[in-house]
Length: 443
Ligand SMILES: Cc1ncc(COP(=O)(O)O)c(C=O)c1O
Image (cartoon, rainbow, N blue to C red; front, side, top):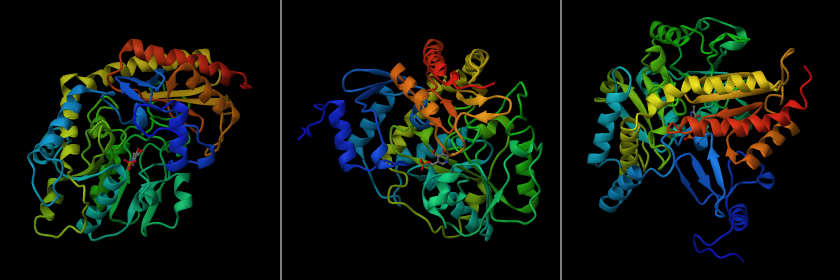
């Protein structure tokens, strides 16, 4: 028997208790090997035994301001001691102030937000809003994109995580991705469905991983290609389709701008957000809508709601988080470190034959590992695993770095408060781990 008093347990005891009585996401429960974390500060996590781990993925690309920020903790504490919760039909100051602040930073006339608990619920409600508004039911989504694990968001998700959850929502129509066909423009849409959903910059769902733009033209076109996002906007306008941007992962400074669509000066009709909104200090998501959509619902019923919509303490966390981005210039920092991350990536690419390609936009980065660059042979087949990727993962863990490994790729998405020294520290650990991968390279 282990003690259940907090703060008294070893890593081993914590992991055993978690495994015995709690269920882990996206896992075969018998195969999981979680790391126990006791506390976190800045870019570092600490185990109960005091071992320091560099968080090179901001957890799930979400703790953008870094861990343990006292300003956000103070705002949460203050709000919690005054008003914890009223149901969403009430009005609160913190909710109103957060809505106004978001309206100021969101692109164009996106200036009203329906608050949810996270990203998937933001997507669900974007679908509802679009369907109510257009009176149409079809939703276009890309073949490769992750939009969340609730039923509707899962149906929109274009990756193997969807397969076990099918059949899902009626009316989802898929359209091709960009780089595989080398297209410079989106394919024409033959029919006018209700709404088009997309990640402006892809995260974990892609077989070549995350972000996208390779400024040397590498072995493929930039993704998204120049003009793509603007082209999607134009096609949507032409057919009366609402454009939904899923900024759950790419938003809130990750790419060096407030939102990824800002790189292309494009205003979607609806925008899903979560993660960086509170920097994950508390659960909160939202779907922002343009003025004409908000106006439509001035006289029409919206058939949707959530007990915890606009939760006061989560709103306080978000408001304080947005202040931190501004006070500390974190979005500028992400933009500044874009070039620094690129240099690290390139150094690793030049040194390690197992590095097939590297890409980043701001602090949204990825390293693709290959057995051979020519012909292109990923270290792990899409949706599979390999002993080599597992060995790379073990080497990173032993070296004191946490990040996400997906398919054949190593994600490099640290908190936006990271310094150049800490960035270098992370890439040193990756450098050493890549020696393991180099051993199987054939050309
Ligand atoms: C682009 C994107 N959309 C939606 C989601 C779902 O968000 P949540 O896990 O908060 O429901 C995620 C989560 O990773 C995401 O990356």
